Length: 559
Image 1 (tube, rainbow, N blue to C red):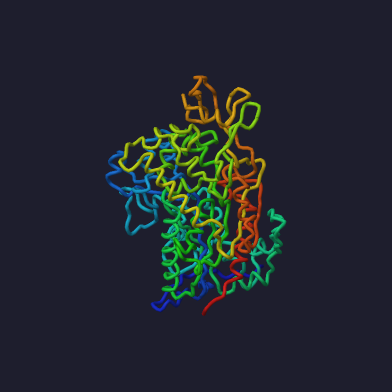
Image 2: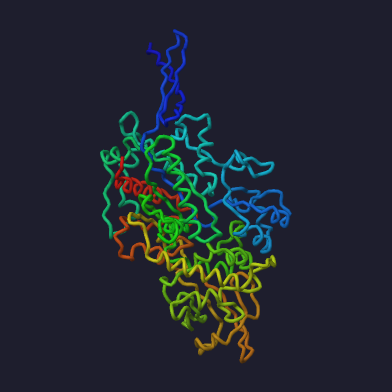
């Protein structure tokens, strides 16, 4: 007969006033063989912070007058994880989108049960989609709160959980459960068995497997709590960078107040979050470079994305319900992004180069291109379609809500600010950076945006200038009239044809590879994923975990 195993009982830990921790056991009957155990968090802490991409942070409306104007009882402005909200957006036109997604009347929808602003809906209810992996280290600690509540406190509900929940859980588990009783755990084995060569590491770099000794050295007496920091993606990335820098400072001080040794953080970014992270560190914006140990950039549009032009002129290119929620027609997208500094900062910058907006005839013969001088702001972005038919700004789409502060002049001013921001962060990267992004010919993206015109063979660039819009179907097809002859010519935006991830072309992301900067320690040019779902891809996640550990190896503790 096998010997009965003693019952194991985990007991909670408590924090003392001086920041130290203790645990109190309890008595049991003599005939009950119970082992009581407590788990104490390590003394050293390096927070890992996920910064999402554009549209990846949940937003709420902070202005009561705007809620009345919208005739809404709920203050949700943007929460793509919620199906009922998404269904509502299907039937929301350009005016409603402009009013709801206004940078001046929105803020990040944070989890704060002590100061709920949800009316009938509590912070717990609003964040009920946040879930924690079984056995997560979030269960450890001297608090009566559930693991899920702790995750919400770390900002996991601020971001689009469908896109980021998996990687948040994976980072939390693998970075904190790599060893059990000083032995390599199944999670730790995943790390040491991972081979960077299998994750499409660019040939420019040499990266070896992480050894068990290396992993143990990084993990010993160090905790890597995983946070998510949302930001108002309608605002300038520079402003977001400054706000998140202040929040990181408070986070570090908060861990110190708990008696922990916390000096630096590691940032993990997605898409536009990479631009925000660069602003966090930049001396003109967040000024926090010394407190960021390193950055892992995921699918960052390093030089911008030409898809921003396409979507403002013709709506979201993917079909189905998702595109209708995001805006399947130009007016629905323009009403938001033309009034949002952050959205405009996603357009290709000057470093992107010349001639990416192309005009061809039906035989594919080149008729001209813009920007000719390499200045997309003057040649494309600030240009009204009433002036040049290929301009970014369709005046009738800019201000459907009739707001005093919106319109052509307002959008042009934002574009000037976008140019200044682009100039600030050009070629600026943290000195310890890693990156992964899509380079997939099966997930084509817009390196160039091409207008195909049904023109006579002998049309020239000068003839292109003589055209004006006669009609626009709002999804990328125009009828153009020749101002001299009155001839009607059909034009349409062609599908993307360049490798990428369906949003960011490899051409833009490759700036990280081609900038000849020693700051990048490894770059993975990957295949197999679409932009928004990149962190659902095993190679993207594995390369991220590996990069975090390599960054952590560089930590030099002052105490």
